[in-house]
Length: 574
Image (cartoon, rainbow, N blue to C red; front, side):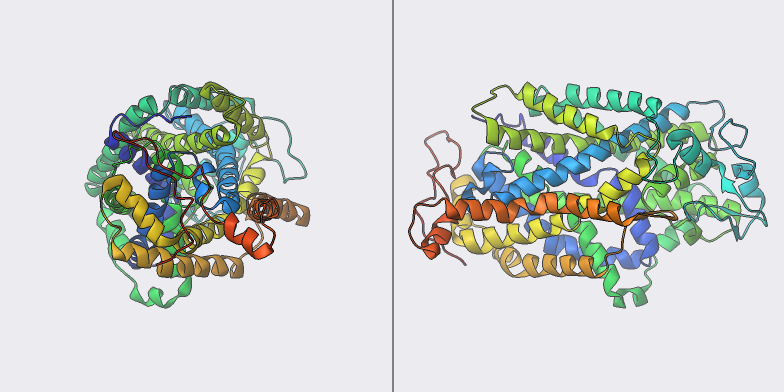
């Protein structure tokens, strides 16, 4: 079934930029900088973007564009490894099953941002406890940390013990948290309502195809850049902002001797580009064949890196100001994940002049970035279903509804009173360690089994130029060992999941590993099934033939003819 093409190549680039930037840039990148020596983290981050992210993005763009298919059929180039596509789709499905809930939380905070008095700024609400400490009290005292349920390091106040108003709003109002996984409690209906609205938005965004979603991406990508620039300009005018910027850009070079910083920088550089998720290959499958993937890969990775750095400046100007007001150091605000987004940010915003305006701008920005992350993932899953079930269902509408319905039903677990524990568990294992395994095998399959000479031929047939020598070296000799080291270190530094002070029971950790294996097991299973079902007599011949491109591996019809299949070539390498 022929795939629709982007109306303009800029639609494609902007959509991918939205995917790569995402809300993670607002939430994870500042945390990594705080944890890893400020400006020192930027050095390995930019280094791994150049030598790791660009070759991997280029690879996925090229094979996606040449195949003109989704994340499963793209592996017709080496049929026994179609499990890579299946695994990537399972990974991205788990991710979107809970990311839709995070988007719903942003929506819920946006609703309360229009309140006359922000509910996370004071302790005069029905959900507050006697130990609640308002933002006014936080600003009245300095240099003593509040013992917090989540150890979020957000409270910096006097000789009193309690929980900040922002944390109580998050725990007692938004989530109404239970005491653990053994007690999921009831469904939070206000969050179910937000979840319904989220899926309706996604449906309206996607069901008309990329020619509509590609145009909408201009708004959802441009608006966050405008708002982040506003944050930066306003933040620079506030007292204390210079301290925040200094903390951000001043490199603590001694931290570069720690292997953990290099591994985390590599992991973030690759993860921010959605490597091994099937999203880039799927979206590139909508390209016209003459598109130059190399220039797009370079510019996309550079734009993503510069976006992260710009966001860091905006974040640390605000943090510097709030730290100045409370009389504490900038690193007192070190936090990550949900604590940073739903406790630290609201606390900081409540400390700014006109806090309602800043809160609205912040959560609108996070929602726009969230949409940009969700749409390509849903597109990748839908494309994968079309790859497999094209003969059964011809209409794209069916697949879109099926994907959104499945994520909605599964997400009902996440909006229960114990849902935050489920979200944390799935988030802990959804990409670990499967994304690293898939990324390593992608580079090895294309670089060595399929061969860079074949890839060169594909590139000449598409946009008429040779692949740069540096890309050949990167794909074959740099990316595989780099990804393998990242994978091994992830296993070495593994620790069981936990949320705040809550330690997950052993059975929950077992469920988490089952989630990881769900995206890894298809790789050996499909490999064995493909090899066994070959017609050749010897095992060696079966393995060899199963790794050769099949008759469906070819480009789309051009203006003058057809790009012929590559199935007749022998296995070659650089």
